[in-house]
Image (tube, rainbow, N blue to C red; front, side):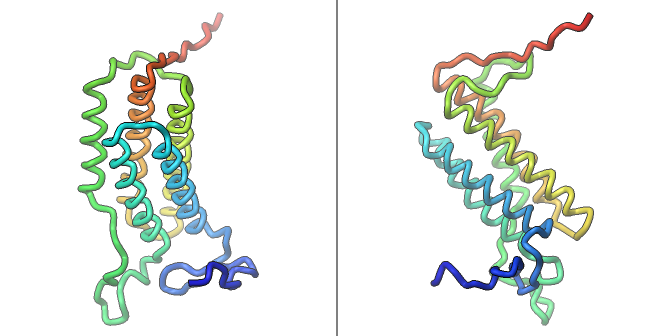
Length: 191
């Protein structure tokens, strides 16, 4: 398979199903940001982390490719001309979201109660996790914006929302794992 096709040299790209759109199209921005998110998750995975977290992150990366495929597929291209579902378009499911919730709950059982917002940082791995969380929130905002223009499966929003929650709690867990202290945000007192 050749990496370069030259079909995008004039600023357009194809969605799944063949529709050509400008590269600045909101749908492209949505799945492009999900791709960026996936790369940052790979960066967290490349740090010194426990095997369980590593496995969860690999699962999430696979799900983000699925989510990207969902975003790259316009509603009118989800089915074949005979009305049958395209078999090669995977979907994110409620079970994928439930899995993230269970992982969040397991981590929270081991973490101290949070009484303040915390400042991102303290360790490189923790910082990577917070950056990834921010990219996840950006992806979520773009997908929400996209839903105002086109019909999108809203499970994509739920998944990204839960994933950003997971990444926040993971950052807290990695703070403990790396034996650093969370720095609380203490708002400046106004007079």
